[in-house]
Amino acid sequence: MVAPTQQPQTPAPAAKKYTKTDFQTDQEVRWCPGCGDYAILNVAQQVFAQLGFPKHKMVMISGIGCSSRFPYYVNTYGFHTIHGRAPAVATGLKLANPELQVWVATGDGDALSIGGNHLTDPLRRHVHIKVLLFNNRIYGLTKGQYSPTTELGKQNDKSAPFGTVDQPINPISLALASEATFVARSVDVYSKHLMEILKKAAEHKGSAFIEIYQNCNIFNDHAFDDFTEREKRDEWNINLEHGKPLIFGAKKDKGVRLNGLKPEVVTLGQNGITEKDLIVHDEHNQSLAYLLSRLNYPNFPEPIGVFRNDTLPSLHERVEGQIAEEKKKKGEGDLRKLLFAGDMWEVK
Image (tube, rainbow, N blue to C red):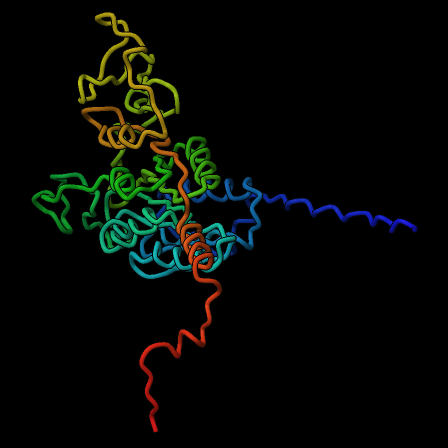
């Protein structure tokens, strides 16, 4: 017997190498000069190029607001939806085609006010979408009304001339309470840091939520300057790194420790305090992540980085598993039998 001739296998095509320009469109980018959205767009286009993910399988979904113009400026498939409903549309899209990588661009008003419940559902369901929440603590597109994240007591001629009386929402705490498995924070002008966060979010197998402090230089300028300006950021930022103690300060001489269940700022070297006394960050400790989300300026330095990074089965995997389990018990379904089951009547 003559052995069959072995046919040489055709090598798989190499992944296309993209550049930033591949993710730029021919649309004029129309934000106010100096807006933080430009910096975020620049980073996002660079990151998408570096991912090597097929461009035709990437989708950008948005709601309403300045940030929601993203689908026009990122050369992938996209959909500019209605106010607050971007996460719901993204959920349907991801379930319909799990091979897609789905990103959501939204703002603090769009996502946390009219879109509040639409945001929490995909996070708790682990739909594997990536939510970028641009937080400028104001409604920018509608000319400066206070938003769900506006600081308590902030005066605003448009909607709070005597100062806001609403307690602001903490987006990181909300995402953690919604069971998002990847929760992080960065700043529009921290290009290198934001790039690393977006890459980690893209690689994450689960719902990812990234809060981005974004300056609105027209209606809420300098909102984050106290802890993000170049000469202040080292003194007032804690860079969260898994497995490392919470150290900060221009001289790296300060840290955060627990006094019972209460976090407190301490100075290394004083009263015998060393790095061993400080909180060590653990991305897999959800309780610690929530505690860190409550550390805010001016009582504490602002944490940036990844608060939580865990993996749980996605909604799609759970649904598929449930269907497979029922098939084992009952066999393949019969649609005709189902339609004609139970009481029947004939209309003449």
